[in-house]
Image (cartoon, rainbow, N blue to C red; front, side):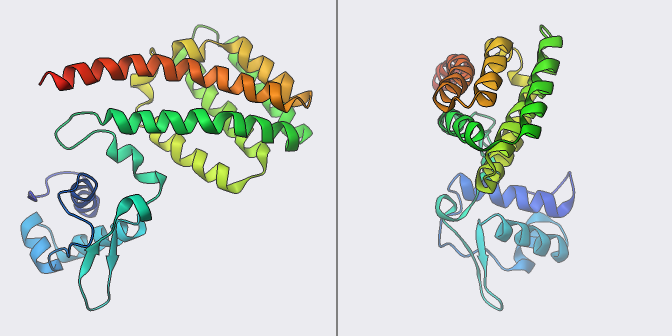
Amino acid sequence: MLKPVAKRSLAAEVFAQLRDHIVDGTLEAGEALPAERTLAEQLQVNRGAVREGLKRLEQAGLVSIQQGGATRVLDYKRTAGLEILASMMVRPDGTVDTQLVRGVLELRTQLAPIVARLCTQRASADAHAELSVVVGRMEAARGDLPALQRLALDFWAVMVDGTGNVALELAFNSLASTYSGVLEQFTQILAVELGAVDDYAALVQAVIGAQPKRAGNLATKIVARGAEAIEGLLAAVDAVQGAR
């Protein structure tokens, strides 16, 4: 099941291998992991690397370490956070978990109008000014998709900060981290969303003008463009993977 570690830091590779086996179901919830010594032998690393890898798994909500007892696998769907999403999108066999990607898109689509409405109700004048600056940069970058992609992340970061909701900010950070891992691959696909600079500008005006309903509708319109484009790609991926 496990293979010798050959790259990255030893602890990071221990974490990655065990994490992948937990999320793909090879290691089931409630199952006890082998002792540190056994894991070190199987992975061909020192026990310190195993111990650090297990600690990272515990911090990620994937295992429970009992002092002097067994380390047991947890049901990650009940205990883990959004930070493991990026690692779950591509399975160990190289195939893409398209249902998971759809789940991320759905979460993004649902959160966008909530963020927009709350930002409209709570954002300060400084936030208004910052949003205007970002949109100004987007207007200057029309046609430069990589630049627009980075600016779109900045835009939503300011919007989320404007809500004053720390829980939303942390959720955004996790989604942004997941998204950044596939940033380059999605640049062209998201052209229809990234190029809608006028919609971003209209959203800023709705926020400044205290129009929460309009802001929510515009936010939905923006992210729906990207979701529709990515769904087309996912359907193609499903067809290819299903034909294997």
